[in-house]
Amino acid sequence: MTSVAGVAAISGGSSLAWLSDWAKEARRDPVANRQKFENPKIPVEIDGTKVFFISDFHLCLGKNLLWDLRHAEDFQKMIEEVRAEISEKDILVLGGDYVAYPHFEARRDLPEVEKLLVNFSSFSQTKFALLGNHDWEYGEKNVAQIRKFLERADFDVLADESRILKVGAAELPIYGTKDWRLGGMEISEVQKFAEEFRNQFKLILTHNPDWVQKNSSGFEDSLVLAGHTHGGHFSNSWIRAAALYQAKYKSDLIFGRHKLRDLVELIISNGVGAALPFRQNRPPDYLVVELCRSGK
Ligand SMILES: [Fe+2]
Image 1 (cartoon, rainbow, N blue to C red):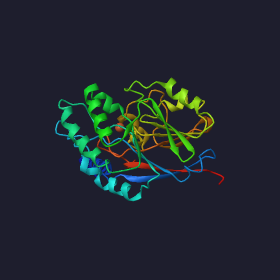
Image 2 (image 1 turned 90 degrees about the horizontal axis):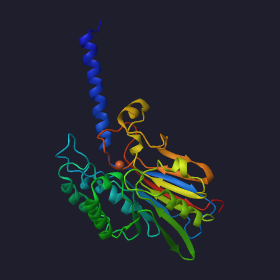
Image 3 (image 1 turned 90 degrees about the vertical axis):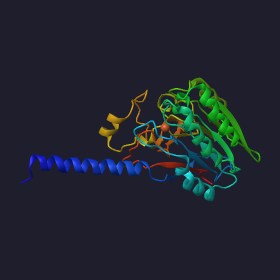
Image 4 (image 1 turned 30 degrees about the horizontal axis):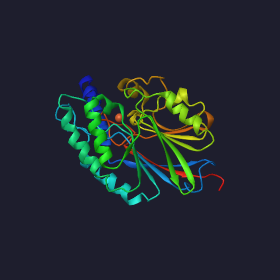
């Protein structure tokens, strides 16, 4: 018969084993989450283009926290894998949250951001970048610094702004949002964009997917790529509910691929880093989405 102390020791031991497994998963190298997106309005010239969406680095030197988060060199392997796969016509997007927490010496994390972003300087593809809630949380001065590092690496930073990517005679309208929680995102701006390009295929890049659920009406023929949620960190909904903040719309848009109204599709990355040092069946990933003209 197992004693009470024995049961406590066994359950304590297995809890520690879980924590250790979850901590290991949080520190795994990010893997490519490959998706194929089909839409008949994707122009022939864009057909086969891949969008690499890499989000949520959460770089932190970690010395002022209880745990050690990601450092720039932790992403070296992933960057080389992306470099080996990406072709000239592809699009590289960074989805925001370059930093973790604005602790007492926030500025000490910024050199890590610079070190990470220098790695992307040599990528010659079309490059866009967003800013996430953790970046905005670092304050205006530090956001300006992160933006400077991004621009130095030739990223076009989109903050409630649109661009038209021209490929031959074809056009791909692209919109990048500010952050929904802390960046002051204007829903009306993205709605104006969707209205303007109503009859074309559109790519919408956003850090936080939470606004999409209630506001996707009128976004026909859009693909939305997002990060922010880290896949919810835990596949177990009870642990997830205890560990994470509530989304504004209490939506379930925290993981995977979703078909919403008006032909809007949303794909959410688990992110490559994490603000919590644990993951359960939600490994770090980045999106590689191939845009395919359907019915070809
Ligand atoms: Fe994040």
